[in-house]
Amino acid sequence: MFTQIIHYSLHFLAPFLFGKLLFKNHWWDASLIMLSTMLIDLDHLLVSPIFEPNRCSIGFHPMHTIWAALLYGLMLLAPSWKWRAVAFGCLWHLCTDLIDCLI
Image 1 (cartoon, one colour):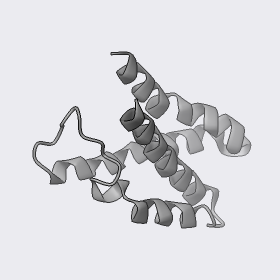
Image 2 (image 1 turned 135 degrees about the vertical axis):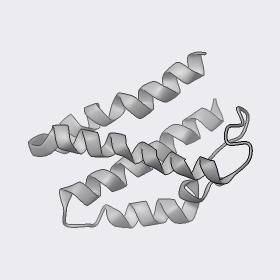
Image 3 (image 1 turned 90 degrees about the vertical axis):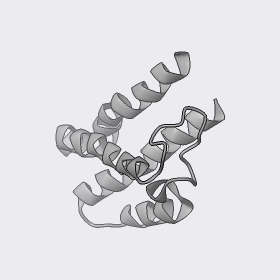
Image 4 (image 1 turned 180 degrees about the vertical axis):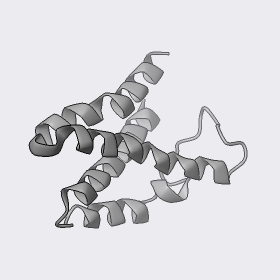
């Protein structure tokens, strides 16, 4: 249960902290954008079973691969703060999932 609290806190609370720290002028909108990057978990619907408690999603699901991470990293170079918020949110999502795999 402790790992679930950590995992979901990182997913749902950290975007607001990052919004305040990284996107001061647009922190609320950036936080909501980063929160919406949870949608990359829709790729879990492509496998059966959809949820496997012992499965690490990093490298398993299409939006959780190194190739997706490289794309998210490239998106950090976008001139729009909105696209940078999407990129940062996706990368943070992957970091959170990786932390969960390591725990």
